[in-house]
Image 1 (cartoon, helix red, strand yellow):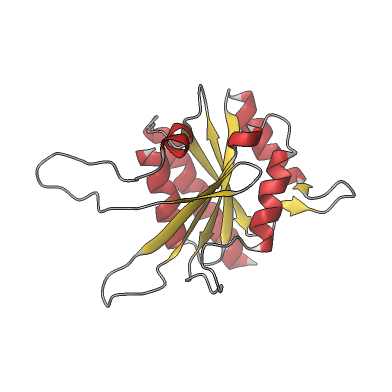
Image 2 (image 1 turned 180 degrees about the horizontal axis):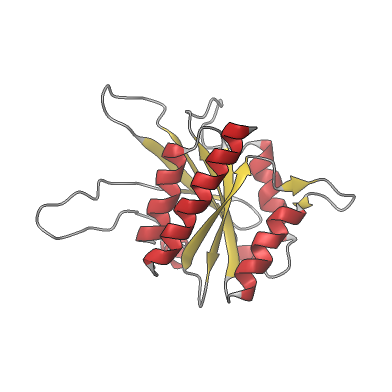
Length: 198
């Protein structure tokens, strides 16, 4: 999870708007891919049967499935603190994205994960921080994430996330090639250029 999670939280720190993305994996419940889609709510359309993924989002899913990846979940990246009575509640577009993914062919269903990353509610001057949590499955079971500093001078790196075992199975450690990170960075830069030009 280290490179993929690093991509998610660094993207959350860089995006100028509340964005959403999809999480993918290969064999087993290991998340090893992240694709930024756009502004929160842009990937879901209403239908008589309920929320479903847009054609653009489905294209990204098919692309990943063609390369052997499974759709494991979604993420919501908020550059500002969550302004909710209960900060760990989901926003309506996040709930709709979760529901749309559950209807998507090839998604993992009961093990579907949603991750939310937002700027820290209580800021300490000069220190950047983020709050993060996950929801799992159709009942949106809440899972708190604890993110610790990964800085080290000893060469020893501790786990970056403390999760219950069920969530760890879905969010297990996986660092594939740096090429994926380069593709992600290029996609982010292109999305930012597209946003700036519109």
